[in-house]
Length: 359
Image 1 (cartoon, one colour):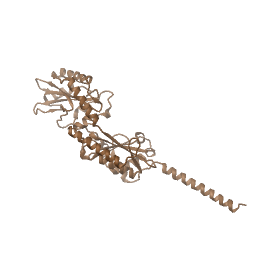
Image 2 (cartoon, one colour):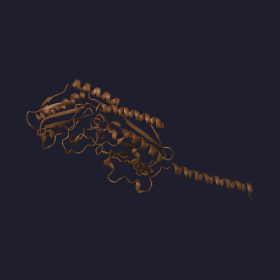
Image 3 (cartoon, rainbow, N blue to C red):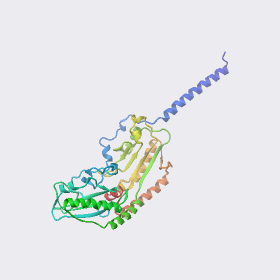
Image 4 (spheres, rainbow, N blue to C red):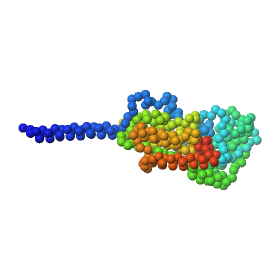
């Protein structure tokens, strides 16, 4: 016969067992990635998906319609618009420019046919322009147009570094071939002077480049990609061209995205993305590519703070250190000084020259 003490102990044991089971169920549920709400707000705005991330180089035009060199990383070159109006690319502040003079009219079709398949040398883009006979303006050559002279330029500096003597020599070799084909007289700039100019500009660029990333890490439960996308859409992000990438579009058509949100590509490509687990994501700002009128740093700060609040996350730096308000204030002040220095050098963030230099 069960005594009252034994019955009490049995009931206590059952209660503890039930409590343990309930705790394990609760903990398992808490650890599962959060999923999006089944609401229309999970949908991105119609027509505002991949188009919004299209990285537009505002000056390159039809030259970029040609295929890249074998093995060239296509992601290193921004997507380019179709050219419907005459465009001028070359700028003496950023390019080493050579003249190819002619005593007779040259057709745009002949120039385009003579251009080499690859438009990159030593990681630097180079461009060919022609002087339109009626308007006397330099422009990217177009079919059906008539031109008096031709000029070509190679970019002195980009994020791959400065143009060196070998790259300059290869540039001249390409132009010799072009001049022979079109029967033009070349006039080349001094190699040592241009290489020295490239090194000076490269030193400035290295000291004034800034690509800033903030991270949001889950405090407790992880997230699914859909849950992240739903919350990011409420802040203004739309789907980018690549898996695991969302962008905050600029207010000006053709401008670079203001911010880029990135999470694990494998999670985005999973057979069932809603079963994928995300513990963090980053939001990045490429400072030289975004106009100051977009208030990019303010929007970066506001975006990560809003997402961290709504998703129960923590804003950190790349090392996982939580970022407090005073640290963010200091970063903002440093970025403002950097933007002022770029502006003084006629390389205002978001401008054509700045986007080319820091490409």
